Length: 264
Image (cartoon, rainbow, N blue to C red; front, side):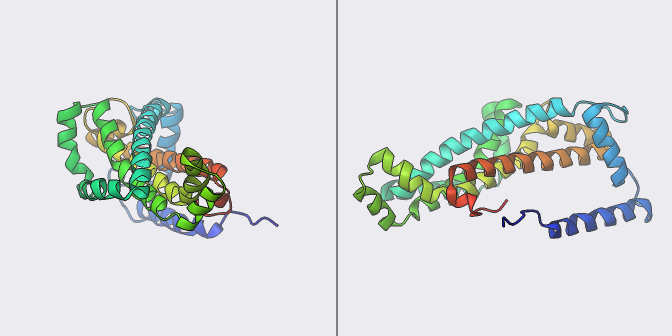
């Protein structure tokens, strides 16, 4: 019998947080301008998506801003994945390239993301280019590190077996090396995608007029803490959904992942 993936234990902590939040805002006198109640946030979220109530200046604009943010995340993540996977496989399988590139990449990795913001603005200006650069740069490192580690960890015996069966070049890569490294790669891709959503906000607070990060910045400046929290909830849900889709794609490619090699 196939075991259900749903685990009710995972609901305990969210339920506890929701209860404490409800108690603090409804019974303990925490002011709404600091922390709106859960029911108020739900009201604002519905209005943000539908425009039914007109309770904030952002009524009914959710899908417009979400679309722009999603495009930025996917564009930046695609650039990071292309560069991270390519360089990761090269350094993972070729010792000379690892010695050339790996120390420098790990040196860059130690620079905090906020440290790249001023130079990104100088290079790309304020707006789309700056945001995509920050997303791509931040997402690149976990993708590269995990891909390089996964490629290097493929057992030499497995590679030799593939060669004995006649696999060479791209055939060897596609039938032996890539499938064996995919569990590690999937972890790196998921980490990179999560970081992409985090750095989306950093990029969108610097002069972008549409997107969830822009709404979050405007809400803070106008004193709408409720819309700030609403955008945080939307980003969390969008990040979870895209992560689930990415994991589903990886599991479709790899039989090992279909058996639960990477948890959702």
